[in-house]
Image (cartoon, rainbow, N blue to C red; front, side):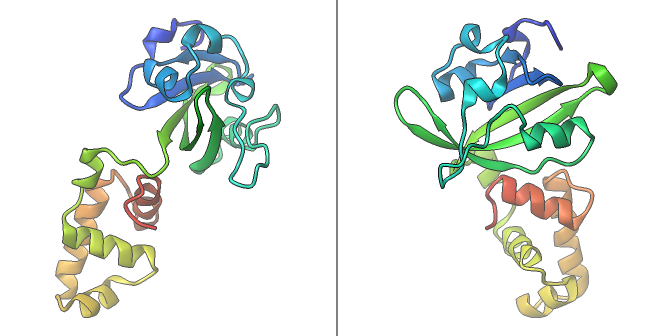
Length: 188
């Protein structure tokens, strides 16, 4: 991915790729639209310099010593972060997810930027109303047996709902499903 043109990264969501040195190697059209920064302005510059993101209290999040990038470089899970960006027109709050690609020194990273509070129609219809209800209970730490009792269904049905939720959210565990659901803003 390093050295490829900006057009090589395609997604409906705003995203950009950067290397281990935090230099942006690709910036897609959706990132241009979201941030007001063109690919020509972004590619070749440090991601922290281009984004300049901060948290809701004004504390700098995007900087040279970025902890999210450090975690990703060291093969640790980097959780989704809410970041406020200064665009030419306004402040935009986005959820930033980090994805590591490749191995070793050739590893690159993607930051996916999704406007906070916005969900695609696909995400809204990802789960049935009952599955969303079960998911919210899972997110609250309720066991399958307790979910069955709370909802007046048998435990096997509750477990079937949980399995369907895992598949719909591309998760391998309930914890991963809850994390994915929070990132997609399906639950609080």
